[in-house]
Length: 209
Picture 1 (tube, helix red, strand yellow):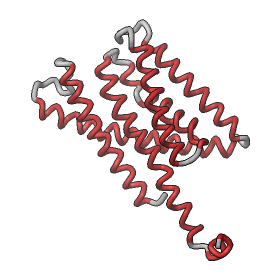
Picture 2 (tube, rainbow, N blue to C red):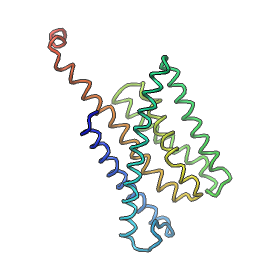
Picture 3 (tube, rainbow, N blue to C red):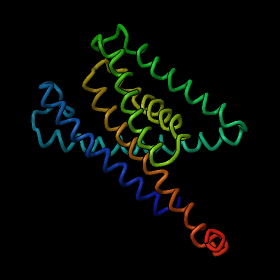
Picture 4 (cartoon, rainbow, N blue to C red):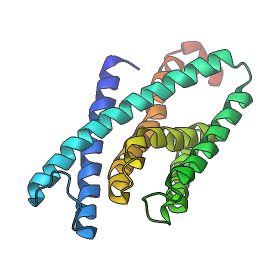
């Protein structure tokens, strides 16, 4: 991944974060009259501020994405058997879902949150992972689920401490959208680079013909 592609991914991530935050905020304002991010009643001003906050979410998501890539690189270098690293990722993903239930059970959140949030996160992560595997290989299942579940949960920790379902949704949805976008773009960025040497190799072309 060169600098140009990295900058494009970063800029798209923060723009998607701004858009996702604005859309999520509008929905929250329509369903919850008390939901305001600035303490004022001006709709346009609130939407503009939510978009600016979304830029921060996008940047935060981008940091988490590259942190996961670094973790994955180090883990694959240390752990020589790939199935062990995959098993660890699967275990941590399940643990993260259980931890969400533990954080929200008998808390200031509504009673349904302790099972609804882990369930919704698992379902949408599975859908993205299914799309990822359909475009790549079956080996992408667990890493994609790990990234979307664990990293999104870690990035949303401040919202879990608020006890407000509106704040949790407003932060968690844009972060998940940004994470899903980045994990779906990864194989497209790396795939183009991987195919280039093969296409330019005359021996490969002759052998295939």
